[in-house]
Image (cartoon, rainbow, N blue to C red; front, side, top):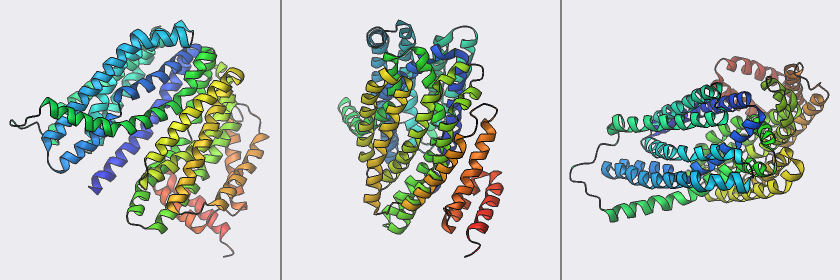
Length: 520
């Protein structure tokens, strides 16, 4: 079991990094090829797509995974396979119902009544064609997860993403614009869904054998099983929708008050602002099982150590990254979208969102710790609160401040999500907040920020400016005596996962150790 868990976690972790990069590539290509107005239409459409796909899944993929794992643990292959069939029926019904509603009712209402922009109606209607494929895909991915075949999930995600990018780019190049990009998404999901069906048919019988001839399962039995699955899925779907709204509600609100060009500027800046989350999500992925294990065996000392180190390591890298993005927002956008210089108009949103991602990074780590020690409902409540707060603030700020208002709303909401999460972490783990290390990180980052402020904000100075800021931050950390021997050893352990960069990081750590502890 331990080997399965480690292997599966590693596969998913590597897959998440690869596909997050692929997601950024897709957003970058779409923004570059479509231009601000059409990218705004696409960004608005994708926001609704994410929300409706989450609703259509009904929170059932994790339920499928859970109950398949339980039935397989007692070799009840018949019920394991029946779980997939029952959940798939529910999900296909939800997918078809919401798909039809989107095409004939919801899309016309959003385009003509809510937003007053008829040009978004056809793109929104195409979402209705994506939803049925996405629910089939979600159901079989839940089955793959239930038998720890995480590589099958990665295969289907690869087919989905590669197909989506290739077809979207191809359709845009032949002149189909936003509609072409969305048809590429439809084809990507359709091919991924087909691949999941084929994998299930030809490879899954090794892990979930076909039902025995004497297996009987009445309609009443299926209703009972469906009720069990839905009951488990309710808190899952609430959390998923709330998290989806945190990411997309600003775009949905901006679509009502702003032009599509403005929305395009925002959607070009948003994925760049979220780059620091790769650090915090990596730490969060590691801290969840570690905190869970320490809490289970009542090893409070180790638990407190994990909590303190997770915050310190994350903030050590995330804070300077976010400040750097805020400082160099304009030249970053100018460089990345050099063929579309108009996207520099998104610099204000990028600068504000980058600061907000500092708060969201701490929230993500805190959430993993709270989940790891057995309190999964608390992050759910905070996410729901955060999504509602984001929507309200966006509605208030966007009409007056434009895309900067949306970014400000997101940043404020992230802060108010972070605070209660931190409180519960320290309360449940009985850990003292690492106040002094955090103050030292913030002070060193402030020194870096002052130095970066005086660097010219031009494309030519972007990379020299980043290098200067890194050097200033590094020596500022040494100046405030941030590093302890324990920190250095922890960073050495992390460096082992960095491949060719491990030697360079070790040399840097040796230099720090020599300076920091030469008199000790």
